Length: 115
Length: 466
Image (cartoon, rainbow over all chains, first blue to last red; front, side, top):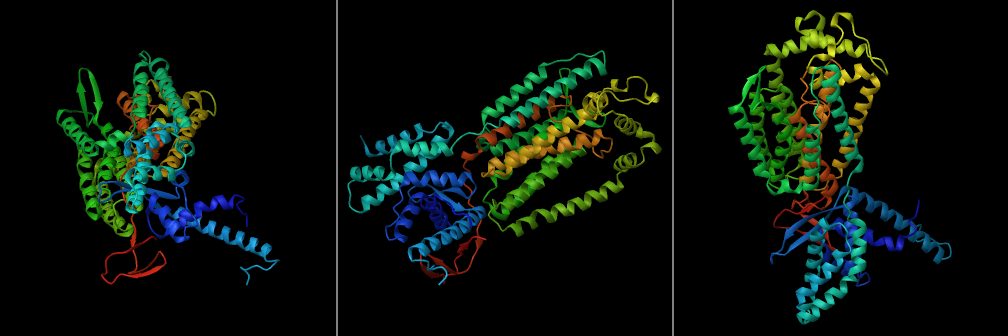
C-alpha cells in the first residue's frame, strides 16, 4: 500500500475527519474535543485548523451549515460527507500500515499488528 | 484598543492576505466567532476580558500566515473555457444570422446590435453574481408569474401561439419557458428544510407556470419546464435538502409525476394535432403536411462532408431562402452550406459545454448554487437537444431555439443572461451560504459518543449518518 510521506503532518486531516464522523462540530469545538480526547496531546492551533477545514470543504470531504447559538452568535458547523468517510477509511488503513511498519522496525522485526 | 476591536483587527489582517474579496466576510465571521468562543472559555476560567481576548488571539496563530494559507484555498474560478465557448457560440450565431440575411434569404438586413446586447447581458449577469437571486427568490418567482399572466392577457394569437406585440416588435410567449425553470428553482430554494410540506408546496408552485405554458400553447416549453422541474426536485430530495428521507421524498414527487405522465400519454392519443405530428414523423411522404420534414431530411442526406451539398431539383435553386431556415433550421442550413463538418463542429461545442457544465454543477455545494446552475444548464441542454433532433428531420417537438446560435432576439437575450448567471455560480458558488442542514437518518436509541454509551430512554430522536 502506498504510504503518504507526509503522514505525520497529514494526520491532522485524519483526526478532523474522525471527529466529524462522530458528530457535526464547529471549529472551536473540534479543537477542544481533540485536546480532551488526546489528553491534551493534540493542541491544534485555530490557524492550522481552518485552512485544512476549508480545503476539505473545497474537495467535498466535508460540508458546512450555519446554526444560531443561544447568544445569537452564528456558528458554522461542519458535516462529513460520504466522500469524506471514504477518505477517512483510506487514511485509517494508511495509518495502520504505517504504524505497523514503524513498530516492526522499532521492535526488531516483530509487528504488533501481526501479533 | 477595545477587546472586540482587537478581534476585528486580527480578522482584518487575515482577510487582507486573501485576494478573493468575496470570501472575506464569511472567513472573518468564522474567525471572529472562534476567537469569541475561546475568549469566553478563558473568561469562565477566571481571566479578565482583555487578557482573555489577547490569549484567544495568540491561540489563533500568526494572522498573516493563517491568511496566506486560506488564500490558497479561496480563489474565484472564472471558467475561461466556458466563457470562450459562449463567445464562440455567439460568433457562430452572428455568422448564421449574417448568412441568413445576405446569402440565403436576400434581400435582408444583418444587424450586429442584438449580439452586442446579448454579450452585454451575459457580462452583466456574470459579474452581477447569482447570489442576488437568492436575496429575492419568492419575488422572482412571483414576478415571472405576473409577467406570464400579463403576457397572456395582452398577447395576440399568431399561427396558433400567443405573441406579445408592441411598437412593431413581437416576442413569442413560448420563450417564457426559458425563464420558468430558473424562477421555479428559486422557489425550491425557499422550501429547503421545510420537510414534506416543502415538497408539496413545490408541487403546487409548479402548476401556475405549467398552465401558462399550456395556454400559450407551447408543448416544447411545457415539456422543457416539466422535465427540468422534475429533475430539480429529485436533485434537491437526493441531496436531503428538504430534510425528509430520500425514499419518502421521491415517492412524493415521482408518484404524481408518473400519474401526470400517464394522463399526458392518454391526452396525446386523443389529440388530433399530436397524432398528426407523429404521423408526419413516421410517414412524411404519405402525409400532405410532411413537406418540411422531407425537405429537411433530403437536405441533410444530400449534404457533403465538407462544402456545399446538393439540392434535389424539385426544391428549386435556393430552398434556404425560406425564412424558417434562419430561425428553426439554422443548423440544417449550415450543414447544407458547409457540410457535416459544420454540423459536427457545432454539436461538439454544445457537447463540450454541456459536459463541462454538468461537471461544475455536480461540484456545487449550496442549494442556491446547484438549483440555479442546474436549472439553467438543463434549459440549455434540452433546447439544444430538441433543436438538433429537429434539424435532422426527426423532431416530435418544435424547436424553441439553438441557444446563442439560431436567430431570435428574445431567445438570444434570455439565453445569454441565463448563461451569465450559470457561469457566475461556477465562479463564486463556493462561498454561498444557504443555512440548510444536511439530512441525517434517524438512528438507534443507543449511541456511542465521546467514549460513552448513551441510551436515550426518552425515545427522543438521535441521529446517525447513512
